[in-house]
Image 1 (tube, each protein chain N blue to C red):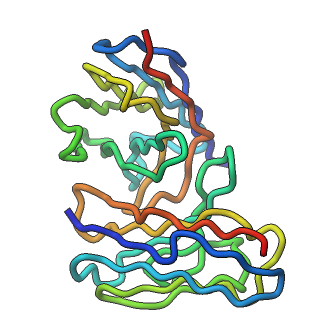
Image 2 (cartoon, each protein chain N blue to C red):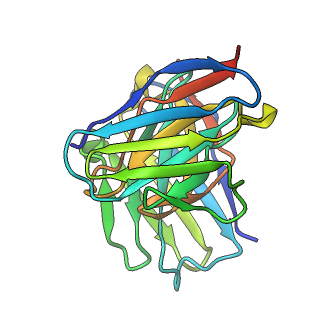
Length: 117
Length: 108
């Protein structure tokens, strides 16, 4: 059964870089036909797609975040990573790892990341 | 970007009611639309994709219709476990993938 597990710091200081890792079990990123990516949800708000990556390395980013985001894969560890730099309080959110075929068919449980000094 | 507009933003209903939620896209997205259910403190869960294809394991009381710009999610007979927030999402023209603002269904 596919499982996605997010990990990383729950608190990041303003202007620093948010770094999260998603460990995938039950599917191989290297041979999967799926995209893998990240979606976030600010407290009490709706869902915002951040970016997606294919195993080949092709990436798509939300234009509103593109200048600050990097999504990458580590095939040897079967992991997907997210880096978001120059964070502000507006980046406080639950960050979800996702498997995508356009739509998200599997979600991680999510990790709350607060941006605060 | 394709803007997804859901209505209503919230509704109150009783167990057994038929519930309809609409989602409108700012441009033609063919049938590239998904619906999700989210309960408090939980990740969203896929209900339907390709506008009307039910995800495996999802009860048949959920159905979807529409194409182009106008879409509908219908719950034929609302059950206690269906009280949640529902989101639509287009995947016709990424980037970006975009979600509707959500519809909260609560108990009347």
